[in-house]
Length: 250
Image (cartoon, rainbow, N blue to C red; front, side, top):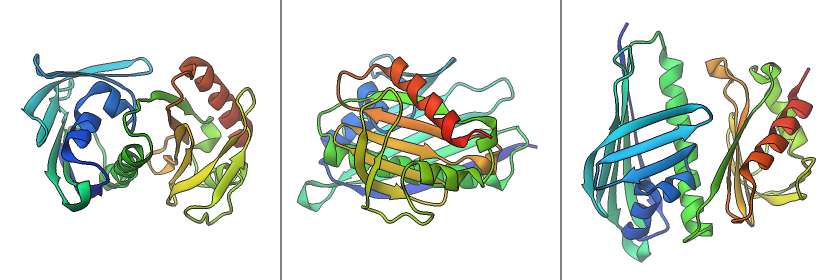
């Protein structure tokens, strides 16, 4: 049965509209807070997305720097599509107000949990956008993703992850975080985001994000933004993959 979903969010961001535009309407900007690798071509009105072995192309439907950016994915075989819109307004103190809408149409048999997952996921991503603008101005990141083992597709795996991160069962926003991953330098940062399904850690050169996806029957995943400029994304991905398997395996 066909279903339509819409997520609408409004956030205040610590940057003027021109900087927000660069973050939401350029490839390096989007890569620094959202998932995957993006290429944005304003002249051709195309935006390309790649993550793992998946690739897609979308049509830019609004290009009005630095106020409005929108795009819509090509229809899938079942007719489903996603459309995104960013509306940017200047605010006092050099800040901006971003109004964001994600509209999705699908013929897949997805229930309300699909919409709810979108909603809470966008809260995390838009928070990450704010952290990027506040703490890594002018920077761009390499995106690294790793999936946990099959055993992590259950709610019981989340406490294991928190323990491996050195966090209590009820983490406190702003607390110091220290842990190690084989093959990487020791990780030290602060907990900048915490919900029952997400954990975000900000270090001097990274925004580390952990996703609990068991409501959708999916494994825990790591999706990290590395700002050092020297990170080997492939090597980092292997290290995080091995770590997730070690701490979340049976």
